Image (cartoon, rainbow, N blue to C red; front, side):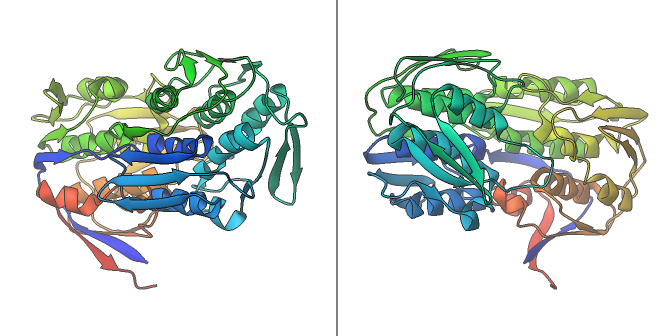
Length: 421
């Protein structure tokens, strides 16, 4: 198992491209189950999660290949609509095959999902929506068994208790082949939801309102294969924005949709960081001291929970006191003890963390606990005095494509080294 070793102190400067969005690519790959034929997905990041999803699609009977950022999927009739535990346990997004399978075949058997241990993240909203559309649900032996007695889902109005990205994506994918109209109320508004709707419509679906809290889907009889390039990863971009700010650097991030980063950009500017839209990307620079800035996570277009750990790390270097409030997941402060080992002063109580800025951090051996916590520790290593070694970086490989190569291109002293255990 690899580790990442960083010698801190380098100022990041230069330009790097941002990869395609993992959280957009995964539900889009699942959508290939909805239509036979040759699908082509471009700008797909080379990540562990993408590999897991292609393995799952192959298990279901689809032919897949991945080369130079292009995933090709040959859709075909699935013999057994079963997603087993040994694959689903590796990645929570595997549950996104549920909606397409039920829509296309009127049945599915999918293991309850795994992934990062950042909170319960139940799929009750997904299942309640499918029930409203006529499905019968049984939970048994760690699996979700879904059957549509009449063979085809019917349109329905589904009101989510809370906005859920996965639930919105699963039900949107299910509704495109249902009979009649489905209305999703209090739907998630994330750019990745919009991107899935864009792909479904290119396949011949009728989806309106994605990006708002009400999405209306008119069911169609069948869909066609698609050729589509995935949008840029706003969380990868945000992580490098924070890294530029932390190191008092000057970095241009290419292939970025600035509108997807507005909540983070506003907080960075509040903290004294320059953030400017520039051509096809965004430039981030810091020339003075960081100012303490509080943040509260919220569904899009609010401050993203996937940037909370990275932003908290940045506030460790700011003058004054910051308060970071996590409203999405109940167990997303696992990076706090590791940052404190590096000299940070963070006190976490429940969903609120109070950060007192310090003059500097010191290198240490730290443990990656989940995907975004891993990123915060890598950024901490960039600014810490001495050497930092981040253990168990398989987490980071789930969401960041060649992170050490990109940071090295900006001037960081960073390498991947074999783990000792």
